[in-house]
Length: 220
Image (cartoon, rainbow, N blue to C red; front, side, top):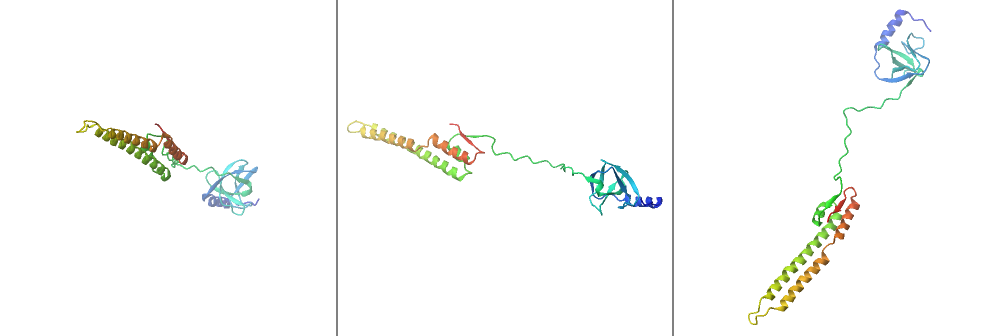
């Protein structure tokens, strides 16, 4: 090793050690002793000896096979790249940044359908299912008109048939029979046209198949 004048070595150490490590990395000494020199030169003054396994802080940049190393007391020197091994960087911990909570689902369970009108409102977001539900609602309206219309018309005829004739004093049996017939036809048409419970369940199942995350259940 080249002998260095004590004053020159001291001056060199002050100049080199005074500069901080701009960007440092963690490393471990992998040789029996790692010599920290005041310059990136084997012949320069040895400022410190690091034992094997010592954890050290070195520069990220390599200069001709040398890295700057932080010495005890905060000063810096130079160590050979082959004498150390960089440690894997620790996982970055993000602070003051919480993971956003998952958006809550629109529904937490099955929605219970009270009747056909209620179901038509619930499925408005799906044009296909809404069209099928609206068709059932229309048929249900037609059935009500036929039943109640036939009942009203038949009752009117029967009432008229019960009024005695001014000449004979007899009731009109024809009107009575016609009234009964009109009520019967209205009830029959209403029964044929009215959607059944199974019809509604079929459309509900259609929705549930297309939207399994938002199921419906019929309560009636």
